[in-house]
Length: 344
Image (cartoon, rainbow, N blue to C red; front, side):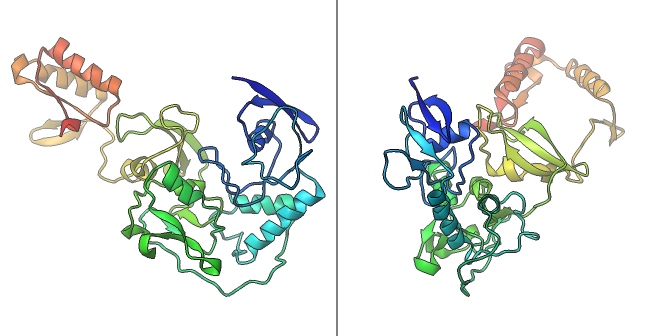
């Protein structure tokens, strides 16, 4: 692919042609504030925070929608640029709740990071009395429009990534808000509860029911189907409290379905979950070791003729695991009675 060179704040940056100015700056670890840009979404330019000065170009274009060109000279921190950014942020926080210490998104709020970068510590514009009820109908996350900055990340995610279009920007002026069809609760919409909108929300407008912060993370593969989506489980006090997709994984690229994102902790910590193999003796199940359980299974299977044995595979297994299971059936047990639950 053809590469080009541009200069950002005096630093020469080499990128592939077709890269935006924002992407070029991020590749060079040059911070440009933004609230509506996302690597998985098409450039939007609504927040106006990524404006920059480009020599020989009039005005202040948004870096997220401007393609980088060979020889381009970009300045990201001029007085004119920062004045526009401050005005944009002032308008965003005019009605924004200022309860940062108790906010669910505290220290992870992108608006908080931008205001700190610009040195904004108080409101310049008067607050209105506009207030929205919190939608808590979804079983996994809440929608609090009082925090919403109308960046449309959630709307674009539901359209461009999931293709569900459960939400959109509705109404105008002070009444403008993210809404479902007919402005009904999320639970009554076509929302699939995948949480892709939630993980991209830069503020506390979309937040999970569980908001504790993990101490460390463990990388694993989702057990719900054979696709092989990888994820990081957030652990605290020996329990799974958060789940996030692995953006570097080629299978899912960070995306997760409702089961992978919200269904792990419930069954992992369910009181009825078996954590050790069991063998039935005298009509009762008793815990045993894996070696003994496997020996017992092999001994019992050996008592049957091949046509008396059937192997049923699982959609929760990977393709490789299912291949091994049918190989065990055909080559070891000698049976052709093989089926798979996904056929149903």
